[in-house]
Image (cartoon, rainbow, N blue to C red; front, side, top):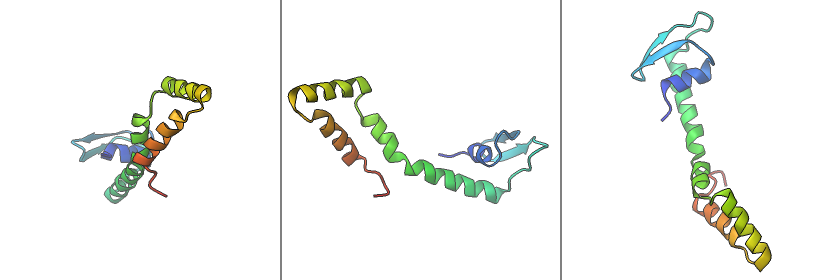
Length: 101
């Protein structure tokens, strides 16, 4: 879940403010202007969409074998003429497809 503070930091990097209960904003920055509630709401929606669009990548990362194990698979594949590593990669990609295809 994207918070109001995350949206504010995206809109006004390094801004000084305090957000209480993910709702009440106390603006402390005398250099940058406080974003409007509409700007904050739109940024929360935008950031959430970006986060959601990357779910496949987070799932793939968790599903892939550790790198050392993958290198071992590749070594054994080269030695034995097998495709264990390639099969592993294909399986993960099939289970968690990229959304824009």
